[in-house]
Length: 347
Image (cartoon, rainbow, N blue to C red; front, side):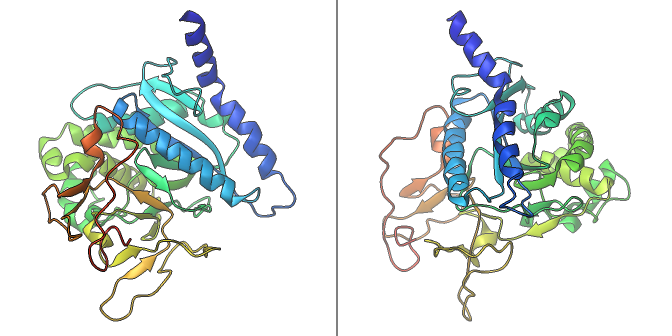
């Protein structure tokens, strides 16, 4: 109805101001000296696929922020939704939301830098009380309260093994001569960054991504992660160097996590350390890491006996977000097979 639409629109337009008043009061608490709160910015598109992921992400964000207590550094939250500007979806009353225009075409991930630019240049960033921003993705699950790991001049980001500078130095030089081999092995999410650095990086990030998209050889070389390279090139072009962290997030199917397994359940209280293993591995055994985020971008594929199914195949037991592109996952899912030591059920 028209009244419902107006109500949802008002909710979207006031989302940041509501979050601002809450986090600003906490930041000024004299009982929390040195507190440096950050605002979580969740980038999302207006699809069923990303709606259910966003709702899961927000649920765990709220849960971990509560566990962090009044002196925790998890501040306000905004879902940055691409669709039709100022036209919120059905979930704008469930989580604070700002809607900007979606760019349509063959590469939907362009909407991440495009939406960030609209957010920054549209004045939304100025209305956030926190001085730092955490850029999150819909398929992130917060595992424990995350402190602010960035500084005013050094953002904190996850170490992506496939973003190795030397591996694409020639392509990077095609896009920005002289920067080949000089980029950090990071992407724009998960990323903790000062607001002023984000303000400087946003437009070049979009421009370098567009430049990559217009270069057939670059597209062939960089594939789906071309906007990650757009960010890495933009940061390098501005002289921004990152605190590169292995323990920021866990990616279940990633080769890079085979020797850095998830420590779970976490001991209470969990040590707040930005890097390094929670439990060092003995000779020939993996480290168990105190990750802050579970990134379920990779499918988990196992036989019914609990053994890994193998690369590029769907398992007899399969947990993959891509199975639910057009509908919500079922509320009651098949539990994982227990298998032997290290099987998913034991984890």
